[in-house]
Length: 127
Image 1 (cartoon, rainbow, N blue to C red):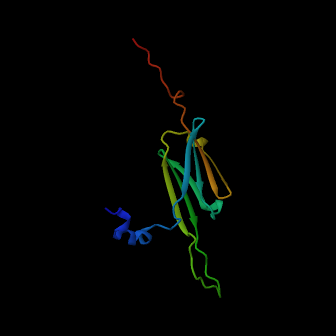
Image 2 (image 1 turned 180 degrees about the vertical axis):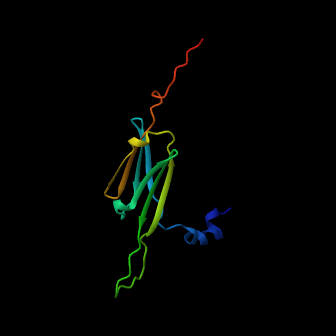
Image 3 (image 1 turned 90 degrees about the vertical axis):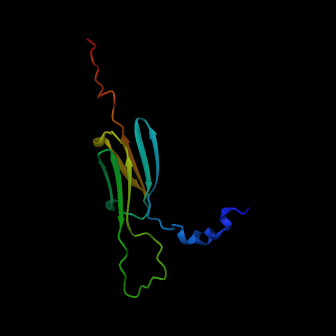
């Protein structure tokens, strides 16, 4: 029996493969009662990145405008990404006012402190 790779599907591998870079690659980890998100956003200016937290969802949006054609400039091939990318993460109950973001060398680092459950804890007297 031949592996699936040898069937007609292999013809479509390169055709169907997504070679675009229109997604934002992220690492997410938890440490010191906070979520830490590191997103690769190379080639984007800091002013074109937006971070929002709304109803437990953290949204990162980045936009890169297409280059304007100059006189005498004729592109042979354009592979770099232009447009808008967006990633959403459910972070739940967090300290929205304490979220911090830093952008350096094409990497967006976001620290999202978790909500202190002990602060909202209510002890109920038993009668």
